[in-house]
Length: 255
Image: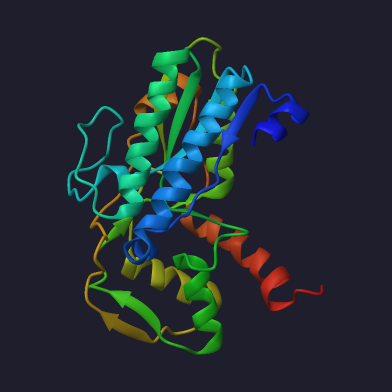
């Protein structure tokens, strides 16, 4: 990383790389700690030594833990981590803040809420469920379907990342929610995908997964006031854009 910073002379950093996912982190906690916590520390340290003044890093809604009150606010007290992944993101936020306190860097941690859309990771719900629907296979359905997520279209999240990067120099440490501030249950998501693909889902009912949480929901008051973040993409519109990408690249990769 030192060589990269020397060659590129980067003045600003957007650090999104990580081992992502709650469920796999339960099986590989050491790997998650190494990649996420050590990796972020290496990035911060190298950026600081290179004279970089602005650092934006990806956090997660997982830092809010197992809560049923909504919406989640950046000013809420720390919560007990429900998975190694959540614990690594809490640690990354703390380490990031220490670099601001020690070195005066402008550091922003962005708490992403269930990003979806074109190029989505294949292990996440919209992509994974779509693939199983097309193959006529069962969808893993954890619990009774009442868990709710704040699904946020990737284009809206990208807008928030750019706004965070462009915020006023010298404004110090900030943490922002990047969500849609509207929750969708697992049952509602499956129904939306059934309508999207005109296929009836077969459900493989499973118990609640260890590390999972019942609810995520972003309060956007602070992020809206400070950097003007305001998502514009509804779930149906976002899924339609995802479907267009899916048809072009997954169903017909040579097209």
